[in-house]
Length: 174
Image (cartoon, rainbow, N blue to C red; front, side, top):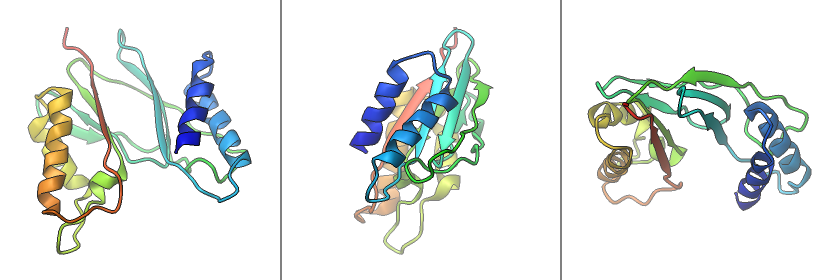
């Protein structure tokens, strides 16, 4: 993960690359320096805060949630691209959408949807969407905290097998 993060940072900071081209460069570097055949999922986006346009690549990562202030939620469709670090020479699909005013883009790792309760049931995307719909009017921070609380309540103290990471970005209403 540290190598992937550093590689992404170094590639993106150069600037001038479209998201898909940036991810191609990251993937090539990871494939060339990956003797253990490890992989990483990644959602990479560039957000124009004036227009609300988001250009993104989803390399095998969870489907982000778009939550409107009215409680409407939807999943951002995956691009169908593979994880990074195992298939050199790949191209990646770049997609675009507009984040409307007062909408929140919510990103999360699979530790959220793949959390287990004591009976061995998964948290799943539908539960995440239900929480996001109820909490959509809250601040991005409160939305993230509500999801984490929901996962903790669901797990009822069961130790999770994967990390739980969330990021929420809201386009200002004005």
